[in-house]
Image (cartoon, rainbow, N blue to C red; front, side):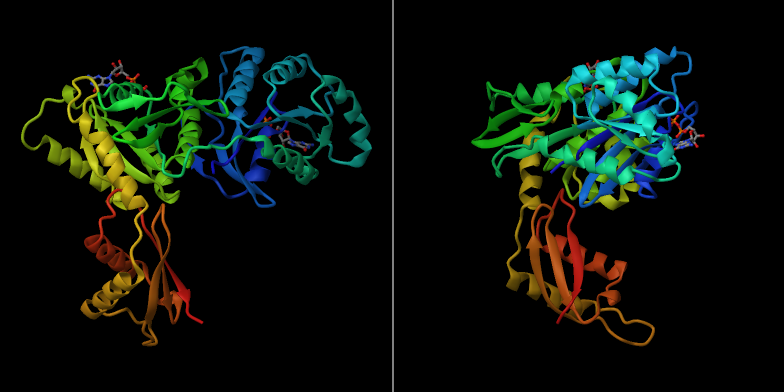
Amino acid sequence: MPKPVVAIVGRPNVGKSTIFNRIVGERIAIVEDKPGVTRDRIYGNGEWLNHEFHLIDTGGIEMTDEPLLTQMRYQAELAIEEADVIIFVVNGRDGITGADEEVSQLLFRSKKPIVLGVNKMDDPTLHEKMYEFYSLGIGDPVAISGSHGLGLGDLLDEVTGRFGNIAEDDYDDDTVRISLIGRPNVGKSSLVNAMLGEERVIVSDIPGTTRDAIDTPFERDGKDYVIIDTAGMRKKGKVYETTEKYSVIRAMRAIERSDVVLMVINAEEGLIEQDKRIAGYAHEEGRAVIIVVNKWDVLEKDDKTMRDFEQKIRDEFLFMDYAPILFVSAKTKQRLHKVLPLVEEVSESHNQRVPTNVLNDLIVDAVTMNPTPTDHGGRRLRINYATQVAVAPPTFVLFVNDPELLHFSYRRYLENKIRDTFDFMGTPIRIYARKKN
Ligand code: GDP
Ligand code: GDP
């Protein structure tokens, strides 16, 4: 289930970043430092009464050269494009300004759910100033004070109350959802077109639509797949060209909706920091991953080029040593026929179940070869029993005498043993320790 996206829109100085910081607290997903951007916190994860969501502060992009109204229009467009719910913030002490009116009309026309926050209502005597904001015609205003932390609960009740209308995927469980993630111009659209152009691929006539994304369902050798969000990928609006940052939230969204993530890298450029963050997100979310190095045709190659490139990727993605790497060219079609069979393979390991008796034999052998660790007091980890509790990603629980005794290195050792015995290529696996009762 993808997390909903909430965007904050409003004039400069109404208190957007104050509110953003209040909601996000210290749980910051991504921090982006770039010269010319005064704020480094633009996305965060919010949580309110069991609802988790992404939060975007659209005031985070600075377009100082642009007139106020142009900036505001960009921000509103961006919010309309990316968000499931928009928080429109106004300054209650200023009353309604021309820019407020303009923006609320844009937002209203988009038909997106909007929550109107009237900020700087630091004490109840100011509340009578709220009433004029009804005339914006975008619903009941909520009185808040970002700096005093007042009314934010009411605001978030309104926001999360509008999550119910967000459409979910309705593909069959055995449909493999694929997303292609990577910076602009790495060749994602070209790869999709090339894959869909393959002879054995039958593209469904009816595109799948989920909220504003257009997916492409297809079939190959009797198996169902869907490439998600290709329309969003192709759409390169003004805002996205000026601020690559916002494509990160789109990538996170796509990852949440996928089973298999194709992490696309341009062979000419190699890896950048953002690739690592996005790959890290796919890993944390437990998705299967294939690293696709595209534009392989462009490089001058000798017998070491591929090995060196692979080593560089491995060094950068230490946490993802399970991900296979493919070197392809969407242009010359080199090795493209390998992509979908590999998707199928990693999807199988993502959903693989290990029989309990086989797993326990394996653990016993592993412990015999390399005894479990002890703590300073000489207490030794005892593993009584192991079982796989979930797939996608494969998740194992060890019932032990004391979970604290299972350290990173031993967990890693067991993970490697499991990987040596079973083919878990392309998928993260999780191992938890639980106290046996
Ligand atoms: P943004 O440009 O919309 O992101 O606005 P900021 O969050 O940077 O806030 C602009 C100014 O308003 C700062 O000086 C804040 O301290 C102040 N401010 C924010 N929220 C409140 C509030 O609820 N009450 C009062 N009195 N000031 C606030
Ligand atoms: P996207 O922004 O990631 O979807 O990238 P596109 O698919 O739009 O490709 C960006 C540019 O790279 C286009 O001009 C493509 O023709 C070019 N391109 C894509 N794949 C390859 C490739 O394998 N080799 C070469 N030489 N160019 C490519």
